[in-house]
Length: 198
Picture 1 (spheres, rainbow, N blue to C red):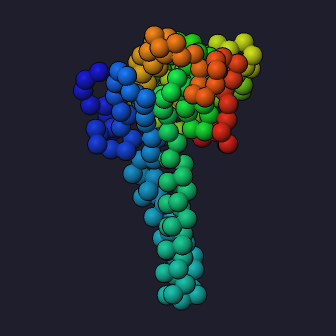
Picture 2: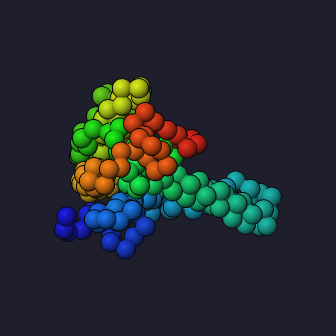
């Protein structure tokens, strides 16, 4: 697809890499936090400095530095989640799903994304949710052995992610790949967590 996406500059860390034929990593997006969250982190440091101000200037400086550092570390960690299509699998946060276990992707605009993360949400679904990303992609899990009905993935480029999944699945079919890297088929793996979900 051509044209820039709102809020995603081509050179930014959050900008998804376009799908490319024959490469192992056709899509890679990092769900970085917006600048306003970093400003709030600094504001938390200022608030901490005000709280400890009665204890003297050194305490105030320590409160400013410590509060801001802790808040910025939390923002950085929260915004480090990635979505990748690689080696016959969809990797979302710390979950990995073979493409053979996925159905057709559905692009969710702002309103539909809000609905699917609120009153339409299924508690059994896997959700890689970031509140500052208004759009999303919903992908049905077709593996009958997996109780997860679908994946809800916050993404700034839902159409590009959908296109990458379709292209990767087609390429996997041409090359005979049917599952996650390192597994024979991968069809029974379903949604597997590599640690806590992102």
